[in-house]
Image 1 (cartoon, rainbow, N blue to C red):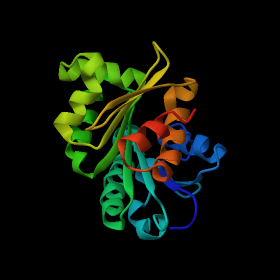
Image 2 (cartoon, rainbow, N blue to C red; image 1 turned 45 degrees about the vertical axis):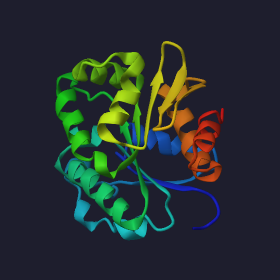
Image 3 (cartoon, rainbow, N blue to C red; image 1 turned 180 degrees about the vertical axis):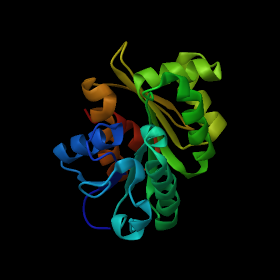
Image 4 (cartoon, rainbow, N blue to C red; image 1 turned 90 degrees about the horizontal axis):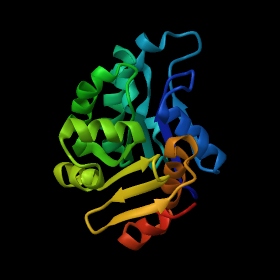
Length: 216
């Protein structure tokens, strides 16, 4: 792998989704980042997702980022969302899933169900503050224990979340639960971008994870 960490994300061409926002922040932090999206003038809901050369897009990439908003963005984004995770697994990339609230809050159960079907392929799961609250209620889990309980149930290596109430980012890992103060910028996405930039360089052990989580 070339020097430095590279990240790609499936995103809406208007940049409104959380994965696209993360890419913009990551780029500002010096992380090599790019968006996979529809061609100019193409309808994103129905774009030709089969034309994406995922193998080429993922060359030299460490992270492949998706957000749950793609599930409800139309048939093509939803299929590309699923395909990107499968190809990432084949190409040796790590999948990052950002769980955010859908435009229709009533669809949160369906969206979360789609994530559950993909847990085997996800390496880092991140909840925005509002989605953390909604999913914890949906699952009947207390907020303080939510991240660690999700990690135990899904076996996803790193389950992260951001809390607006105390401006803290939290990481649940098999060996420890880590808390890091965050600036709170962009609903915790700035913290996540820095965490993903630092993690491959700090090491996979608990001390490396703790150091990456405290990068700010």
